[in-house]
Picture 1 (cartoon, rainbow over the protein chains, first blue to last red):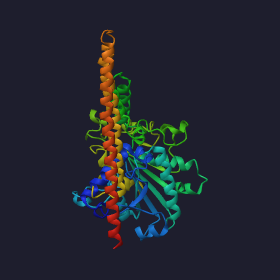
Picture 2: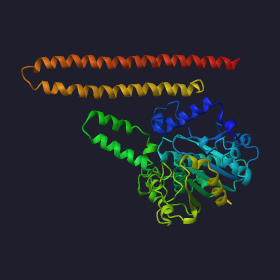
Picture 3: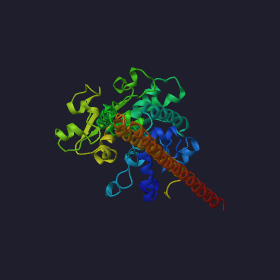
Picture 4: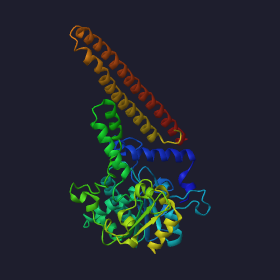
Length: 327
Length: 98
């Protein structure tokens, strides 16, 4: 899929980007109101949703391979966030997906979803979509690789958690095919901006003044998807301890890899300590050089100094690292 | 807007209507809460309490009326927008047929 093919007119790109942002900000409300702007979860091909049956998949991918990589975008984004900027000459019209297709024969699928819906709901729906994909896929599946950017990484963990609890179900069979998962700029330990917004809204709401209350109420209009980023909670729809991310195990049959970025080139710079990649701080394990916090081996964690949050989804060095880990 | 399908245009229309309604509700609440404050002080003076109450009722009625008229205009605008989108959709359907 080329950038041109999937994007269309620049005005359409802006409209689509606007819809993605609206879904991120108020997606749960749009979904509840059955608003026409609410995005339905789908695997996208050339800017259009794929129907998950054998004929449609063969039409979209005339030569499907047994190796599938699925790319899941982050909050307020769409699958377009994976594509390298066209002004970078040697990276024109490509993404991690197209490169893995060309170089390692992976068939890339791009998920688009309403990022404002609760994480658990998106995780469950993603798990069911993967079940339908595996059932309809036209050739035997050798392996599935999942690549999630930002919130997309949490959707991966939520879907895996959902499927692992229903391992006996046929539509959870996809989990057995997943070999590796890559979490690119994913807030496994929560997002500071959401924590700050939560505190600000609570303080403003507590002040006995109608104007500050209104400002607090406006802040509280943000979607449940954003609120779930506070401490990356509610990965599972079950209201139990496993609802929390820190109690959600890294599934043992898969290999998990963390990729993080920082604003400043100097890894020890105070800006990096405070702001990480601009939206997500470097996971504790990577920052401390230990594997205590994420419980992942240190060699499965890589920090890219000077690469900000959004750039992590389309960066040459990040791609080379993913490719190295995949092979 | 021309680049949005009619389903999304309807979504934009619904969202704008909801946003204006919510904005009017919130502004009205804040307005009435703030307007109540001077009357609360003045009505403690027994000599002028009765006329203050009358003035407050008049102002309250006018204020609520103004906000209600904005809601009505908003609802009418939504109806007009729905009709326009319906026509766009019908026109597109006709083009697709021929």
